[in-house]
Length: 476
Image 1: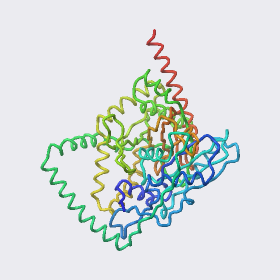
Image 2: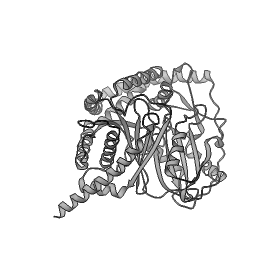
Image 3: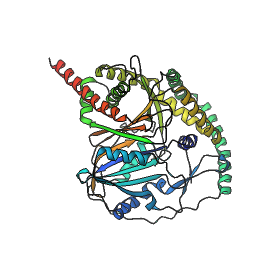
Image 4: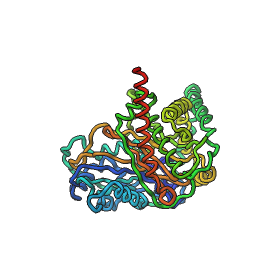
């Protein structure tokens, strides 16, 4: 029985705060056909479940809210409930698939069961099929979600033997037993916190270095507390979602980076900036002297010597955030890239992400009841100040082909949840040379997000044109 971390628990509290919010992340994976039959698909998933134990566990709330919720084995687990099947009238196109995905993502997950679903979608053009997956954000963050994707996929078109191992769920603790255990953990936790504080005081050098980084990050975060100009990008939202996609080749992004400088993330955010500019102009909203302020989630997992994220054997959330201002007032793609590049470089130096991680960690010291109240207060503050306009999250995926049931994964579009006052969110996922942008919008106020998707695609084209001009100038 594991207890949810403060960050993971906060995603549940956010749903409790606002009934229009569904805090699940997901993806739409397109595969070469034909689709597997239900028995083959179920056997493939069931054989991998031991590698992802959360998929057979549900959330159990602690009586009176005296502790954070815990993960317990679902004694009534039924794989058939989680594996679902539907079809589009053949040949289903991208627009029809997007509408279906939007309807599926608008439905909240049942808290009484393990918090995930997988839908096989038949009827796509060219004999293709799709797998639409949903998993609650309290289970996985974006980076570890990629690791789960790798667990459920094969590296070869020849699938391994789908041997289903027997599973015996552990008994669900009684309410009394859960209460007693939670009280005991609280007592131990306070003792351990005091012991840790005493140990750190004895080693001030180790204490002062991260503290300095945290204070530097807090100074950098301070300007972002001021609310930006009002925009149609923020406000009240409904319970239904709209979905749009854009994509490009990773080689095109790297070509821009090589010619104009910056990182892949800089180029991607530049394209998104140009997309938001097109969307605002299409809405008749002025862009002069305006920015779109975005929250950029970043991983704070430990890294290996080669710079890759170190996997600690869990799939819990280990994320923090930086804030960036997208200069939508600028129409020249090179100037936009220069601004983004300079700004993100400054943000990394400012230790914003370190400050965010420290604040997240400190929430572990707060009683769970206060944590829940804090989330509600935070939601009210954000809704009143509107100090960000959107969220943009970039998750690097595997750069080699993957397979499921012997079928090749062709592309995958990510899904990111939104909550008021944010009406639009953008997720980016790179896979096997393709960069896919998944855009989530509030159906009631942002059903025009296809304009944003078009703006991102044309923004990449504009950057490539500018890159070609820069190459030509260098040759001359």
